[in-house]
Image 1 (cartoon, rainbow, N blue to C red):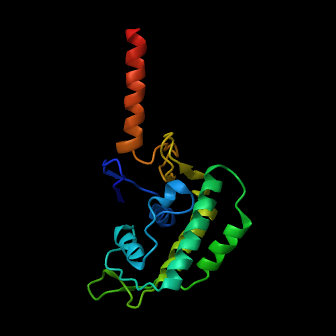
Image 2 (image 1 turned 30 degrees about the vertical axis):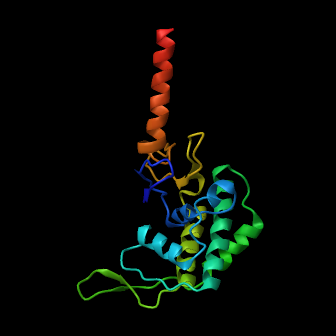
Length: 194
């Protein structure tokens, strides 16, 4: 996804999983709340267009479904942070995620030209089921112990490290990785100059 933080720097971010991309829509706490877009159905629809879901998905979202998506997103945020910090998963949040995963997911079809298309009638509930199932796969699969928080002191983005060696530290080398390298270079240059 392409992120556009308030500081004006645009950069690419790979969350490693669809469910972690949903965390970019805001969430609990004062920092995440600044980025809240799930206060209206159009915010969720915009996220769908920018997410790793295949193009062409048209989702109809009711106010009740939007509340459910926000509740699951907030639970997912706490679960991902617990996983990243090596802490036990909060039981109440596990229950919220499991209830969301029990929903019927989005449906795909094969078009006459052999491409994948979305079945008509996609709802916020089906979207939630799809995202929650992705979270279950992440938290129980091979990358469960690779959920990380960006290593920068001033960044809290969560991602799944899907790299082969499993040593990813930054949300993006374009942003936090380069800023870290630049600071380290300045510190070395200053130390050598002293």
